[in-house]
Length: 110
Image (cartoon, rainbow, N blue to C red; front, side):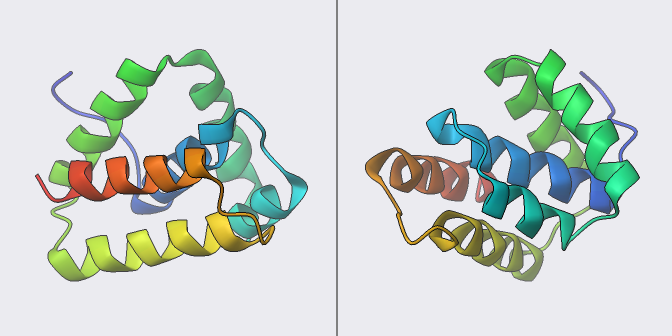
């Protein structure tokens, strides 16, 4: 996978969907939070793509796109804060979400 033809908004939508689905339940609150970051059409297009991908494909797309968009440490920190807000939105930051957060934190800082 050499290039991904995503905008920054599409990348953010994909990452947040990836995180939201870490517990295999995409809650309404999580969906609404993602929709507050991107427009409805972007969300739907990326959601359709996300549903077609397996975890490996998703991780490769995320890392490739982060590199393509030259995400800085500050950009990564903002992204991680958005992910934390997403996980806390339902007042239940369970062990699965905690593990996903740590995984994404390590993945982004490679």
